[in-house]
Length: 404
Image (cartoon, rainbow, N blue to C red; front, side, top):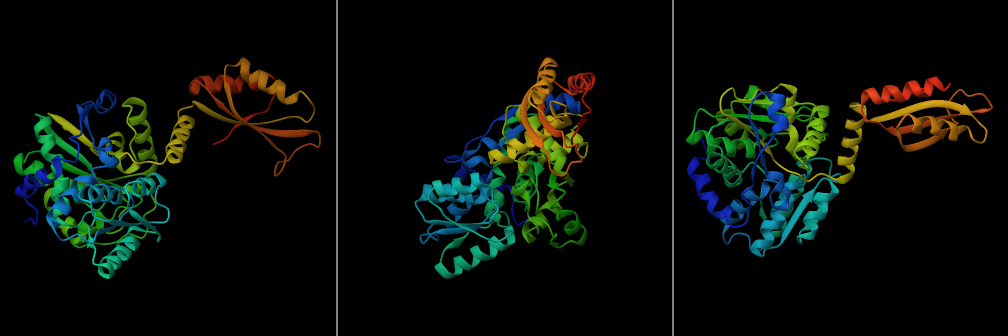
């Protein structure tokens, strides 16, 4: 079976190579050590517009040739819209994109900066598809689907060609799965040349329609698309990509939100790579043990994108700092008189903790009339040091507890 074949991917490379970057394959000592096998990272987060999506849009627009003079339009969570805006500008054609109201600001601004007309509205990708399709019919624009299109799938498959050339002993590829275009395109390219290479797709558990869709043999929608991995939060697979995934992929697994967040932090701390939630699911699957690396040869994890809002990245980092004991939230009581807070802070400073935030809490707490509650957020050197700080505060006479 295949509506898309290896020859289509090879042709797509001609349309893609002049604009899209050949992204690096990077060593990951931290991940290799954790997994007990060699793991490399295909850094599509370093692609132009910050994701792999540019490859598919370039190939699609090349296939349209003279069919998009009036412009192009798409519905997208953000990365596809951004890529289409870049490809359209390269061809000198107008571009309109429809994105959910809660789309990441970085992706909205990226589209607008490239000259695209951005329409915000709706709660899901499906709402945006409907609006974009209606606009295409009304204005005579060319609709560019983010995944359920043979030309788009072939364009994404050019990543697989690069992996074949760059990783001599390639044995397994771990790929994020949203609509399925990226995973199926890579699998077609890789497995057509080396059938023994495994390709495993990874979804976010909060929005993972492929398991049931594959079981039933037809696209089945899930009810929620709320995930930190917004770039792959697709409620319903496409008919084309579902068939391709069923035929070409060896397995599809789903990872949790906490694991995705931890993978984002690990990539930032240990590999110095900023990767969005959707791009980090493959690493999360390896860390969680849902996907085992190849026993022989090299496993490559595709980091599909890096377009994450700074606010979300900061929240994920703070959460990690708290979990590993490098951030301590402390609640205690002090006498409500001058100098009491200074005494508590002096105790904390003597224990070697750094004060980040301090807040008096007088409402909603059972306090003596001459007491005030105090909430501190402290930076520590790890769990052991955090316990030392707690002991120092207790030894100084304060009844304190840690906050989650």
